[in-house]
Image 1: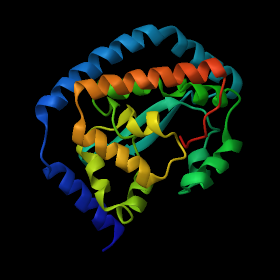
Image 2: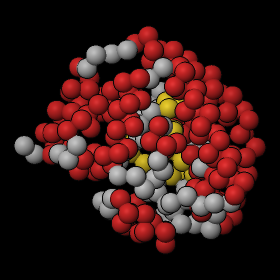
Image 3: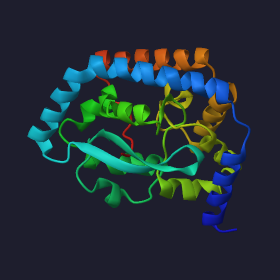
Length: 225
């Protein structure tokens, strides 16, 4: 079976899967309310980061990437640009540690700091408000990676049952160099057990991790835009 037909099958199965409308509706309310609060708090840092990017590396300030969302719907994910223009095309379809190493030379002047603190992802709060994403869920994936993983991980279709997240269990537990199979296991746990309690605990763990990285000045492993 071709990868394209596999991915189409995954999308169909995700759309036909058993829904948890009550839980998802409650989490959507939390998404909207918390995103508005976070945007109000982060308004000044967002402006400062945008001006710093303009001064150090020019336009565009935002990176816009096509991602696979809930039910296989495509959307444009936003984040502050941390790589040089055209980096995604140059990096092509590299995955895993190869991708980590190849992206190191693509970072802008302040890209290292933005990634270390995860402030590059602040614009994704607008994706959450639009309904493209949730604050918690599997990380959004590029279409080309989705095609590659469709034939390697039979349970991968289940990621499409929920909205992709700004953060998730895989990110707070393991980090960015974890294998795709290990990340999938954490994503499936979220999908099966998602609740308000787990949602809030994941956000809390993310906040502590970001704070710890910022205080230490540590640089986490490079990830693709």
